[in-house]
Image (cartoon, rainbow, N blue to C red; front, side, top):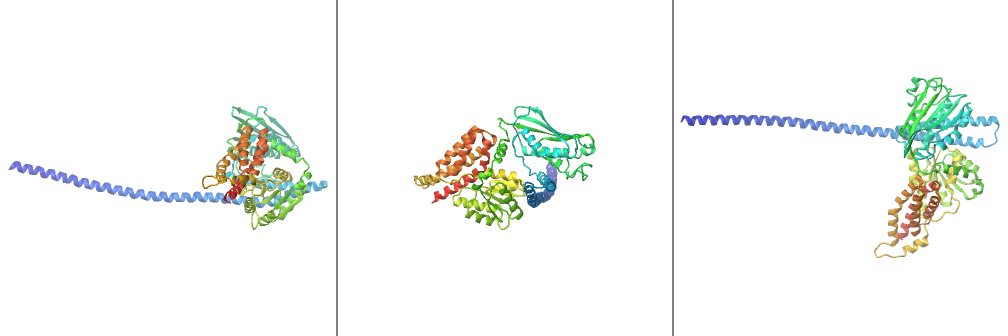
Length: 569
């Protein structure tokens, strides 16, 4: 019996021990669940806070983007508003200077021109700074002929340098390749700014341009460009902050020199954009040397990047009076001063067949009533602006299978985004206000048509294809058009790359292929463009074909639209 009682006692203790363990385990489980629940609540709260912060950050980011866009739009608007009257001032001053004047009158006109050009430079500096700050500045890579670039700058600035009693000299390393790859426009902009600064702070001294080859390998060359002067020099304190926006030296802030302090900041930003370096070496009273270093790609071939420019200058020397009767121009601009100015400029170029209208609606009405060799279209006009008018004109050309009339945008808003809008609307080119007589002359020569425009389609060939039946429901013309649409845009882009890069052999092959394919479908006008490009490429003069590239896609689209209508009919 005692054994049984002992066994019962052990079992009771075992049960009590297990019960105690179960109770403790339950309590531990409850504590764990409570801690997990608390952690989960904290995670939910944290998630909500993160979501709220993300929303706040996104709102802040969007606000910053909107603020940047608003700033760009504001600067662009201000630029346009300033450039429009400046176009009238500079243009009229140029026309006035071409007329007989006394010495006193010539001096007065020169003062007007210098003041207007200074104001224009300040506007351009502000616009460049805004684009750089907004990250909207884009490089335009192409051929760079440094020797020709420097020669151009010297021709441009030498009168200013001599006026200050200075001598301008050039020292260019002969080991530098004739043709390099980079942004020639921005390199020119930087050099002009540095040379003008050197001249401004130097009197009866020397301004020297020095270009040196620093490194050379199979595909690139590192170039150092220096502008050295014997002017007033810069203190070490001023040198440390010289490339910041709106910063000028103490001497530079004086009314004797003027300026906004933006030029060097823009130069630094442009050099940085080109992945280069810029700096200055100077001692106060002993002159300065501003320098920048760039790594530029090498290009094959010996053709000068400025051959087309030289060609344009040669053509400019021709007497345009012989060609004037064949040129008729439609001018659309709501600003009376600009209309008068452009008409005077055209008259000076020997072009007298000019019709002027004040808005897009009138431009369309004039286009419908008469054929024009060229349309000069202001960007901003009342009732209907230049973009809307251009789209309507392009639509009419497609509907009536007309040849595409060159339309040149005229505007004071010279930002790349506005240029893109013009091209998307169907315009062929862009001329920023203010523009000189020389710029207008080159633009007209680039786009004028010396012969009667050809038709979009050769209808006899098109009708022959359209009359052929296929085994299916679709017409042969429709099937061929689909194949043409699939291949042609890509081939046009390939052709563009070959032309721009100067690959004459490849450009010839692609142009010939596109010409043959277009002719087989009865596409007349576009095939003539391909034929002209092919001929230029065969002659090793691809650069001369570049002005034709912008006409290809509009002509292609017009041909496809016309063929589509015929196919449906």
